[in-house]
Length: 223
Ligand code: C5P
Image 1 (tube, rainbow, N blue to C red):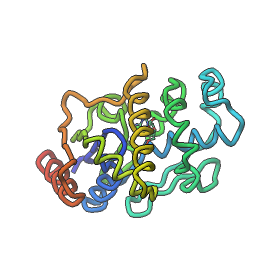
Image 2 (image 1 turned 180 degrees about the vertical axis):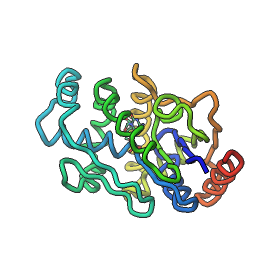
Image 3 (image 1 turned 120 degrees about the horizontal axis):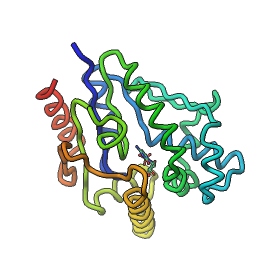
Image 4 (image 1 turned 90 degrees about the horizontal axis):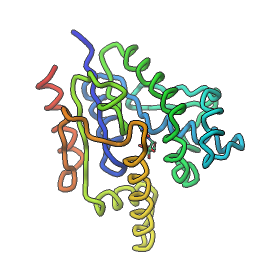
């Protein structure tokens, strides 16, 4: 059986990670969180005094960190130069800087290389989640999904993840999320975009289980 390659793209807060991990686990596929890789690169830059607002500095540093992702969907790992980065990559500092770092072409070239290698090595196939997987990283993917949700639903989900309770926290989360999506959608090199042949799934009114079922069905139809 030929490996099944699943590309799952969309903005933040649409349930990409939860969906991708569950689908990979259910179908016995490998898993890759490309956002975690861009976050790892960003964490390394912040830790090594690279000015993340200076694209020339970011470009020069892009080849330096060694970023390794574990492919088990039930226990995904990420290391930078051998150190566990799973905690530090989720801080507000990294989240605020990641869009600037990921807009630099040298960073993207490096990440796309890692991502294609991971897909080529996955024995049964892989679920790869990100922003440009269907359009740029794996244009020949077996199945391409583009997840969307209303801004309110996305802010509420992200707010739940980071423990934001107050209305003011949710409003701030919503603003930060919209700003990051605008940066990701507006950049020159492989912006966040739905591939022409991707299936769009609006998750606003769906439970996580319903989204998982929908994606599994789409994969089973194609494989
Ligand atoms: O998915 P997550 O929110 O962790 O992604 C963090 C950031 O990494 C995104 O806001 C985007 O700037 C960048 N990213 C990207 N291309 C991808 C995945 C993530 O530019 N394929």
